[in-house]
Length: 237
Image (cartoon, rainbow, N blue to C red):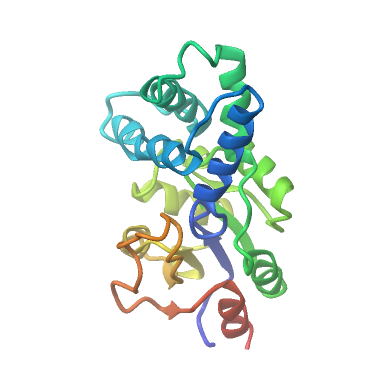
């Protein structure tokens, strides 16, 4: 494929790793060890539902930049209360549970697809996750990044343009030399608006069996693939 691309940057939560089943598994294991019966999927969904609102307060200037790890921890307090667990899980235990986001399984095609792409391009996450979170998540799942980019580099949260532009600049590249890879049409639209190339792949189970969003490409993205293995084949052909 002829594209003037030297690096690929990736959305991570949902595109590269399965956050929902990973968080659900960790929640059920954590609570089960304490004799607490919790629906892990419901808890994961409720915790994740606070993700965008928490970042929006930073995007709109209501708060200064705060790493996602801290926002997750704040959101965990609210979720624990929603599930009636406030008296059963103390602050130290919540700190441990917050690390569930460091133990998310890659989708089955992720490591092989990233490894193939790494043979021809620089690859890095462009995630709202912190550098620490992306480091431990990569260590856990064997994700072969060349660098870690995204929100903490820009001190802003996607879809703010600064996140995409700072990631390209950190690699010493012009925006058009970088491709954003995501399973979310909105992420790609924001990246395209800054001049990045775009690649879409669907993750129809990201939000569970009833998912209704991002099942199909929402625009004429530069590349559309079924998964990261196909993207690797197409981008290295």
